[in-house]
Structure formats: C-alpha cells, structure tokens
Amino acid sequence: MSGRSFSAGMLLLAILALAAASGPVAAASGDAGAQNEITSFTLDNGMQVVVIPDHRAPIVTHMVWYKVGSADEPPGKSGIAHFFEHLMFKGTTNHKAGEFGTRIAEIGGSENAFTTDDYTAYYQTVPPDALGTMMEFEADRMRNLILTDEVIGPERDVILEERRSRIENSPQALLAEEIDATLYQNHPYRIPVIGWMHEIKKLNRVDAVAFYDRYYAPNNAILIVAGDVEASRVRELAENTYGKVARGPVLPPRVRPTEPEQNTARTVTLSDPRVSVPSFSRSWLVPSYHIAEPGEAEALDLLSEILGGGVRSRLYQALVVKSGVASSAGAYFDGSRLDQSSFVVYGAPRGTARLDAVETAVDAEIASIVKDGVTPQELESAKNRFLRAMIFARDDQNSMANIYGSSLATGESVKDVTEWPDRIRAVTADQVQRAAARYLATNHSVTGYLLPADPVQN
Image (cartoon, rainbow, N blue to C red; front, side, top):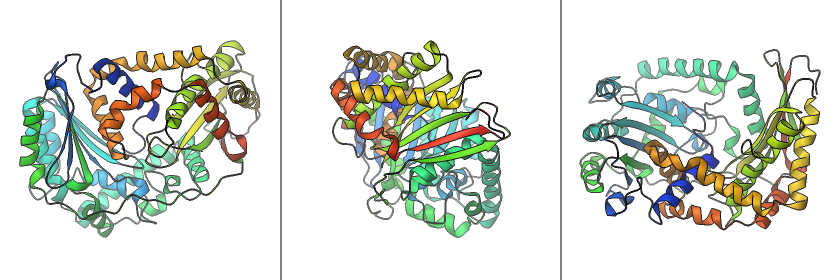
C-alpha cells in the first residue's frame, strides 16, 4: 500500500507514553532491568538493528525499513518506490512467488508493507521461534528478486488499477493530490506516493532493476525487532542472515530541492457529483522534527492538539459543540517527514450552515491563539492528553517498531526518540503562540474546497 501510515502527532504521542512509563531508556514492558532495554547496533555491512524487548506475550514483530520513498524517485518515474514495494512479494532465485506469505500464514502470522514519501517498510508478526525464518526470507529478497518483463507487466497493471480505485474514484483523494501539488512548488513531496497515472504506465523492468540495485541494500536499511526476544539472539540471527548480504553502493546524503519563499494565498477547488457535503481545508508549510529549530516542532505538535486534536480542542468545542455550525473540525501536524512538512486545519458544515461560515469560524480560532496565546491550563491538558491517550501504545509492539523505524528512517536517532518526552514537557505557552503567529498566516497558505457538482453552500 502507499501513503502515510500514521500521523506524526499520534506517533510521537506513543513515544511520550512509552518513555514516561519506562524511564530514560525506553522499555517495551513495565519491568525494569537490562533485559528490557532497547538495544541498537550495526552489522558489518552497514545495516542498523534496533531490538525492543517485550516478554509479556510470545509474539515478535520483524520490520525492515528502507530509506527510500517517493520523494527519492528520479524525475519522470513517479510511483516506482510504491511499485517496487509490490515487486518485493514476487519470486526470488531461492523461493517461488507467494512462498514467503504461505509460510507466514501457516504459522498464524501476519504481514504487510507500506510506502511513504520518505521510506518503504516490510513487516511480519509471528511467534518468536519463526524470527530466524522471517530474516532468511527478508534477507533473500533484499538482493535475489527475479525481475523479468513477465513479472513487471502484470504488476504494473495492478498498480494502475489501484490508482483508479483509490484515487480516481475518490474526490477526496484527487483533491488531496492537487493540494500537495500546489503547497509544494519545488519539492518532490508535491508528487503523489502512488505516482501519476501517465508515468506509472511507462514504468518498466529497466526502471525496476535500477531502483533495486541502488536502494535495496543492507547499508540503506534498518531492522527493527520488537517483542519476546533477546538482543543477543537477534544479533546472532541477523549476522547469519542479513549479515551475509553484501554492502550496496554508498549513497549520497538525501538532499532534495527546497521550497522557495511562499508569499501567496492559493486555492484549489474540486466540484464533483459524488460529493454530498462540502468541506474545506487550509494547509501551511512548516518544519518537520528533522529540520525544525529546537522546540519548534514540539510546539507545533501541541498547537495542533490544542487547536484541533479532538473533542476537547478549540475547533471542536467552538464549531461543533457550541455554535453547531460544523459537523466536523480539526487540525493536524505531520511532523515525521524528512523535509519541510505541513500543518492543516479542516471543517465541514452541519445542516443548513454555509461552508464559508465554517471557514470564518476556523480562522477566528487561529487568530485568537495568535493574538492571545493559549492558557497554561490548555497547554498542560494537551500534554496530559498526549500521555493518557497513548499510554496503551506500549502494549502494542507494532507501534513501538513503527515509532523507532519511522524516526530512524527520517534522520532521527534512538536518543532523539527517548528524549522527546522531555522536550514536549519543556514547551511553553509562549512557544505555542509564536509557532501559530509565525506559520499560520493565510497569505502563504493553500485552501482546498471540496464541493458538490452544483455548489450552493460556498
């Protein structure tokens, strides 16, 4: 599948919950001691390994993250990262197509994969005694895929149909693509993860092999193992499987085109007969955790929570509960990207209310924060909601694997992950107000309108 697998805010909330419950060295269970400490090491061929022990249940999650996503694709080859995710489930010189999945199903396990702008990940959840087998299969397909025209052609048709069903048949998805293409004027985040239809049609075996040879190598990958395991055993298994895969080419730093100064307010409008209720969103470019000034991304995270993070947020209370002008309203900050990211607010009217009334009310809540800031009580409640809402994340080893994998694949370190809660706790109300004033100005935003074919409420 393609797209962003989860929001950065929710991801980082899980980190807060985990670290708060576990102390300065994160642990996957409440038990203290070295057996629960997260361990990180690097194989001789450059593959980073992170082990997150959790001995409460006989289950293990095995994930391999490749530091390549749609934003790393060559010009004119949009969709090749997601296309290659599909090809990884084909046959190798050692195993027939489908054999890996059959083995997982036989032991009652599960598997999947996903592609985003910045990384591609593959994972399995299985009993601990199957971990070595998972590593053998995953290490095998890292370099031994059979990529022929007979394999490429049918899978390309699958991707084309996926685009038709998920994008072309969804007005919301079509508008989201156009908003990204407008918000990002120069950066490759403007290109959809799944790719443009006309470029997907031209992807071929030569493209696939070149992509495989460049990016699918141990020194461009991160192995995350979470669950009922010991670090020493993971190291032994990893050295005997992944450790035998030759180091790939030395890749240059992931430096992409940057955005010019944005100083215009732009709008994108889509009218479609499939739309019954109009809606709007407004997006701004903001720094991600990877590139933000100290404390700035944390302030944006808390701003998104206070402004529109749930039923206690300002937008929900003002527009949905009190005035009743909106059926939905919220905000989110996507801070997990490698490069410049986005902050978004959105809303949809209720009953006979007009869309422009919803938009005006959203703008008023933002202006209030810019002018008067947030109260100490709001800030403290938001921090507490971060902790309370996601405290159960440490009970899910998949969440832990995703937290560390996505962070490491976008330039962060294990230390950054474990220190994040302290940085959140240190955010002040003034920092939140400054973040709103600096970034949430309508004169450099993109507003998207999704309207019925015969709009009467705009």
